[in-house]
Image (cartoon, rainbow, N blue to C red):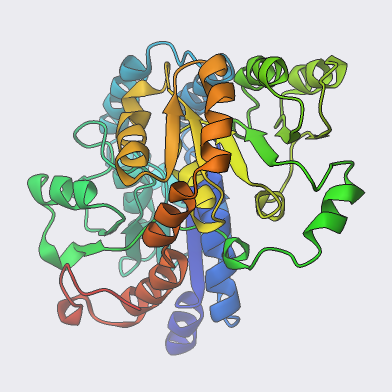
Length: 396
């Protein structure tokens, strides 16, 4: 009976995300799809971290309040007091003692994981500690979804045993500096993105464009600022209308119903296809486009990179603390343009459509990290940690 129980437990994989912006959810969804298809015998679940922490009344409320505040400010591109919010979250996290972790552990009674993967920052010591209460042998894996750590202990917390899958050299160096043993850090080639991003461009692209009211003879742009639907979308659409007529625009408004109404009320001089929140990553739409416009988020950059859709990113204001490294990477690699204002973005469209260098650079930096990550997770889950390969050994 005990052996059968252990066998069942090894089949449970929990992927933990949070609903702040959209990058964490997108990464988790991509991982779930890939791992489940490769391991149909496993139970692979996406779990919102707030559902876990709700088992601790006070801590759960603090985490939910912080995420809700973050998303409200994100719609305005202000994220007022982001540094203070991070400090408060880390401080409250440190106050959760053994009794608090025991309370949170109650969540796992119905789903004790063999592997737990986090694509969330800050709260992983409490998260992993709660899972270890139920299954002391659980393998804990953190995948930072930023190109660099914005402050100490945001991603790297060496006091709690966990494996790190680091997508950039900056993250690797920060992991070393934080004291993460070579046993527990792995260098991967990029961020996880849904496998549909790797599909070739549709052969019936022109027909698909016509079906949504667009003109195949003109360049097609993709305009989105994430699941929350930031107001930048409205300002950029207006700026594009002032400088362009022979253009198509696919516009995503996310969960922002007001933005959706405002976009529909605009009288734009070019064809548009406007969408509200889409439950799945809109990669099928990116495959139709010649360029994308959005925020310099890690997942936005990765989706753009893999679908070979050069990105024009608006320089961040409220999220500057987190996006600074992303903006530098985009500029240094030549895979996109960082523009300060809506007017600058509209001017950059001509450059990015007519200059083939951007797509050439995207091909150079293209990667298949989702497959590499899935293979590495499988190895961590099956092999004793003492015989894992150290940093630098890439899984093809």
